[in-house]
Amino acid sequence: MMDANHTSPIKTRKRRLFATAASLAIAGAIGFGAVTTGTLPVNAEAVRVETTQQNPGFADVVERVSPAVVSVRVDSEVAPVSDRGQGGSPFSVPGFEDLPEDHPLNRFFREFRGPDGQFENRRGGPRERDRQQARPTSQGSGFFISEDGYVVTNNHVVRGGSAFTVVLDDGSELKAELVGTDPRTDLAVLKVDADREFTYVAFADDSNIRVGEWVVAVGNPFGLGGSVTAGIVSARGRDIGAGPYDDFLQIDAAVNRGNSGGPAFNLNGEVVGINTAIFSPSGGNVGIAFAIPSSTAEGVIASLIENGAVTRGWLGVQIQPVTDDIAESLGLENARGALVSEAQADGPALEAGIAAGDVVTAVNGQEVESPRELARLIANLTPGQDVKVDVWRNGETQQIDVELGTLPGDDQLASAQPSQTSPSADVALADFGLTVVPAEDGNGLLVTDVDPDSAAAERGIQAGDVIAAVNSQPVKSSDDVSKAVSSAEEAGRSAVLLQVSRDDANRFVALPIGQG
Image 1 (tube, rainbow, N blue to C red):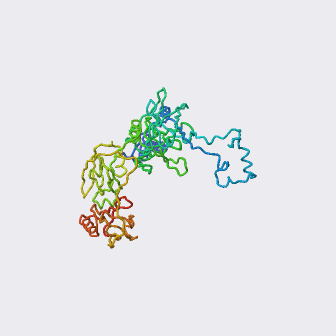
Image 2 (cartoon, rainbow, N blue to C red):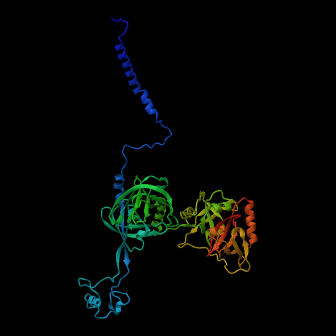
Image 3 (cartoon, rainbow, N blue to C red):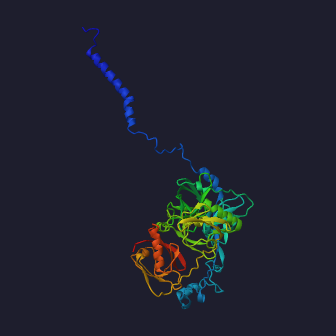
């Protein structure tokens, strides 16, 4: 019989098992859980994106803006096409007029010739293909920007048109008149006169648009009627070579033929861009479309409505990019701005004192990063306006006051006429791989030969070019070139800037010092 103070071995073992199980339960609830969550520590600085429980759709936007989007149908006068060739033949192909009378083709033609000698159609009436008439030639999209009927579209949609029809979202068709076009930005304005108020849309401030934001493209692809696609802004400031003021928004919404002139909306129903071009190796949408930003379109459209045309400021310079080599040769810290290759004759810049070799770095305090940006800045200013132009000249910034002119209808070229007559004696500039002689009129050096392995050849200098200046200093002999190179070396520069004239046009080329 066991002592009351002692517990039996079986009971002790059970008590221990129970305690162990309890400990495991507590560890599972606390210890093991702590170990599990502790293996992936949370970094408080990691990027987090707060999203809503339900992604927004586009139905509300589309429902509001669709009545303002239209299809634009364009008719053009088609030149008369004659069915009658020489000798009464319906073809003008040489040889058909000499067919023998018993030839099967002549017998075939006689079956369709009427009493008056004209060819009849299969119903027996005279053919009317000789008659000039308006025929549909293109179809695009557009949108109302006012309740009284002003419609915006692309210039290439209405180009060559003689009659214009606007098809509304409800299917009704209204005649429209052309108000004005601007080929440089590919914009056009139509006007619909009707006794009604139209639903219209407003432009957004595209300066606030960020890459990655949603856009909704509404238009009339392939003439199917109103259609909607959605995408995001893929890039800003695209230059696709379409014109001098390229500054496109790139979007990945499905834009196809017929969408031209149609709007791209943000989620507030405001127009952020006007669809105008696509990149398409196959002819269809591949997810790369380009839209004219609203900031560009607003000023052009206002001018078209007010004046029927667009007037732009004109500086009167030929410009080129500033490369790293050119920046080094001029002592510029960064390769930015627009290098003046020539100030055009009778232009505002020449009159104000801007000269070839100057680098335009700012206009009215706004920095100029590239020639394209300078062109846009000047074009957005009013003719006759006084502007302050900052130029880099002789190693320092100078400010020049210029009264802008009016951009001519055609681009003007400088009227420099360098002499290209044969010289008397050659002078070798071995450092640059050039052989030059003084020009006959004494202004500049005529290049007679270029070493194909030289830096000059690599940068496009050719025999027949005229070197007018080196580092903005006119040159008339090889000694002038040597002095300019020595001055650049003393200033610690590794390149010199040559002003080269070819085919009545100037450009600048930077050549590294000491490279043959």
